[in-house]
Length: 253
Ligand code: 4GX
Image (cartoon, rainbow, N blue to C red; front, side, top):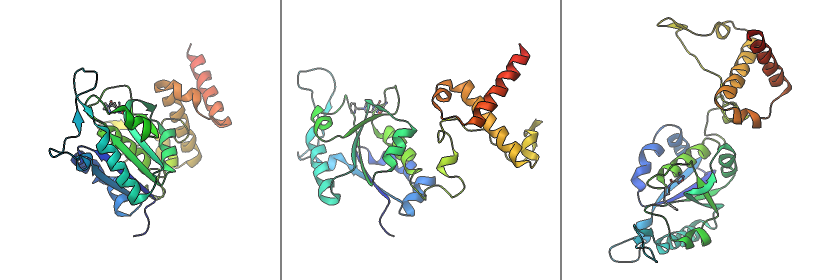
């Protein structure tokens, strides 16, 4: 096995949380193929006190506990000594840059990512100030820790690494590659409980099928995510399809 395309080091207090998602399906295969190396690093292993504590009460008072800076600085020293300077050191937190496909594509170009998963009320601010290069949020809701966000980021990034997805189901063909939602998919049987597969898909007319699918993508995006449609890079053909949709609507009213 040669050099992995990407190394991801994940700093967490709960490495066991990652075993399910990272030991199944596409990510498992990517790891086995040596396309990505995912290392789960227990922050507690870098605690220097005898009870191996990693948190403490906040200066200035208040409820809850704060993750101490020292174990994270020690862990980063260890990572740097082993692998050199990482491309990005990412903290998952609600205040971060909103994660989307564009951010995933940006991260997929890196050789070495470090993800820091916080717990408790948060992390000593000196970590964000002096260790972290990027703060990322996976959405506007509050989680109990940064582990699930880290899994989301790693999953979205890994599928963009060349070779991780099959030749045919390339990352390009799927949702968000062109800023639109995907068209609907069907497989056998052609009729199930009276529910039929759209006739055009059974026709064998490849050009008709391509146009139908594109129209479905445009309609779905218009209906469910007009914000995406407004920002999508539409082709002349797309505009023609949307104009014909508009004419169809006009004929109804
Ligand atoms: N998208 N959380 C992180 C603890 C914490 C707080 C501050 C660092 C700084 C979240 C999200 C998220 C909850 C993960 C608080 N760590 N992270 N955790 N949404 O809600 O990324």
